[in-house]
Amino acid sequence: MKKQILPCLLAYLLASPFAQAVERAPNIIVVFCDDLGYADIGPFGSKTHATPVLDQMAGEGMRLTDFYSTCSVCTPSRSSLMTGCYPRRVNMHVDEKNLCVLFPAARKGLNPSEVTIAEVLKEQDYATMCIGKWHLGDHPDFMPTSQGFDHYFGIPYSNDMNRKQVPLPLVRDLTVIKDSVQQDTTITAQYTAEAVKFIKANSKNPFFLYLPHTAVHLPLVPGKKFKGASKDGPYGDWVQEIDWSMGELFKTLKAEGIDGDTLVLFTSDNGSAREKQGSNLPLRGRKGRTDEGGMRVPCVVRWPGKIPAGTSTGALTSTIDLLPTLSAISGGKIPADRIIDGKNIWPILTGKSKAHPRDAFYYYQMDQLQAVRSGDWKLFVAMDSKKRNWGKPDGKKELKLFNLAKDIHEDQNVASGNPKVVKQLLAYAEDARKDLGDVGRPGKGQRKAGWVEKASPRLLKK
Image 1: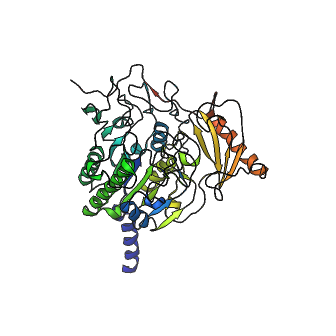
Image 2: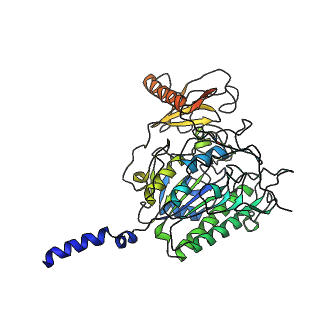
Image 3: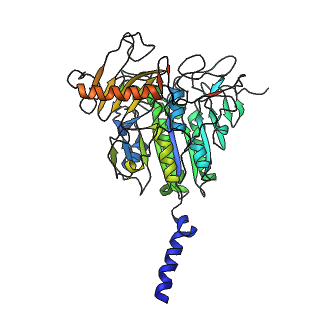
């Protein structure tokens, strides 16, 4: 009788909440830098910026060498990270005036009906906070506290959007606490202090911290104690302050005893705006373009004991993969009533898979599909012949095919020698046009952005 009871008791305990509590849902920290280039940090080859914390993070985690933002500018890339969708899917690829990013007092914003990472994690009882640059609309309906975040502290726009009517405000939740912080050299330190405070306050239960830095977007305002610290002027100084900030986060996780319970992901919204100072090398191009240097970004992920240390992957991954991946590891569910473009890349992060999680990845510039990648192949299907990959098309289509495994700088057009590859990638491009659209051609899978008739920017109450 005792022999029968013991197996039954063991089975009961393994299925009970007691066993489930041992494997708690992980804390999640996503750090999203602004205009940080592919080679701006040590793990991706920087020689001018000292990033010892990120170097150690990569040594204890995984580098994603083929990790992409879905756009080469701010607003669209942030909409993708939050929703797991291409910007054209959620109609955040242009603003209300057909410009590439949202400006203060915009009537357009991320539709509250979209499901964000924060909302998925809230369903799993996560504490959620956004600290830093939002840039998905400044009307209350579009702000972080309407998109699944319990609290917000930061700047709703880019660092250069200081206007007479709408200064660059520092906001807590929905209230402006300072009307202009454009030249504030303490902004990174303030974000870091808020992040440390949030981690300490929520160390006993799962939390999601989204930390989209203002750095290193122009104008450059590194903290005073970092001035002159790098070999690359104020830009490098600010990169090194980001590294310091990461160190403060890791110190806090360890002090609270939750380092092993926390997944930390570090990346950027697009490539560096600079092209000649080595920040995006060995990639071609910069912010605002669909060359690799505009959209392929550095990414490091760390979770001790879960993500194998000192590893890297060349799988074709993207910011759109964060929502389904973080949903999976937290026990959450992605919305079943809409298309989500991202893939669950947890098998890749654990080292169990090396396969590309998708057949094709699309490079959009505003409303134009300019290139498609499948495996190692990248095909440019449309571009402005006068300003490569920037601006409206002029009617000229020039097919350019590159093998990124052999030609990462996109120098050798091999389209003529690979007609079957070109045909396959053109078919993928046509699939994207039907679903997501192209210039003058709506996609059947597009959804509406948020819209209000009367703008309501964040302003300091006098």
